[in-house]
Length: 317
Ligand code: SF4
Ligand code: SF4
Image (cartoon, rainbow, N blue to C red; front, side):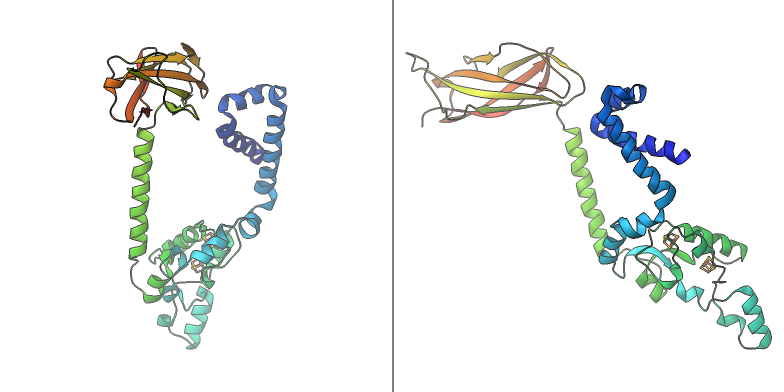
């Protein structure tokens, strides 16, 4: 029953990323408010319940591609769960050791730290023996590490007979050192992280896309050769989860320019919604800077500047 509850909880949480948490609460309180979502939650939860309760580690060995990918990517420097065979071998149970020492067939020094208790195999969710080396089935859950550490503590031996390490460092019996490639990957990771933080902190709440109307360049207003007009289409996207009210578009930095926005007023852009329309911008020829003049618009919501998109204003060559 606990697995079933957990499956419902996790699937609801997962689907809330797609449909929103409010929709999930609505379905929980009244399944008929969104029958298809309710069926989706129930069906996926039951699949998860089946995996949790019955299929279990077979997912790791037969379904999940992680093990296969890992086996392809593994190199001698890869850090995975390893058994320290230099320290552990020759393995023997305490009973066998005592017997062999007693009969003179072996000396204490010949034996390694592994007492062949089988605890590492008993706790392994995929049922493998890590002492046979890295295997496809290992999901690096570290259960064998904990089990073996407990045994080592009881035996008054140092822990870490099974530990995170690389094949190379175990073979050569040297402490693990971060290889150059791993350092380079860490560097790349930090660059990506910094880029992500920069992009997230510079994310605008409203995105304004202003493009000249397709097929049009510039025009002179009727009977007026001292001004030029361009026609634009705009699209304002509200990326927030609150409505944007009283939205206005203004032009920045021109003395005698005239901007006509159609429709004149945008009362509200709903949360995650958008507003589209057109604009006619007229600028005196004297204020133009060549045939392509950079222009910047300012988008205000309730008098507060929310975005400043840029575009170009075209004139004659
Ligand atoms: S890390 Fe987990 S899956 Fe891998 S051998 Fe140890 S117990 Fe098994
Ligand atoms: S738990 Fe440790 S001591 Fe016991 S069999 Fe596994 S490796 Fe050997």
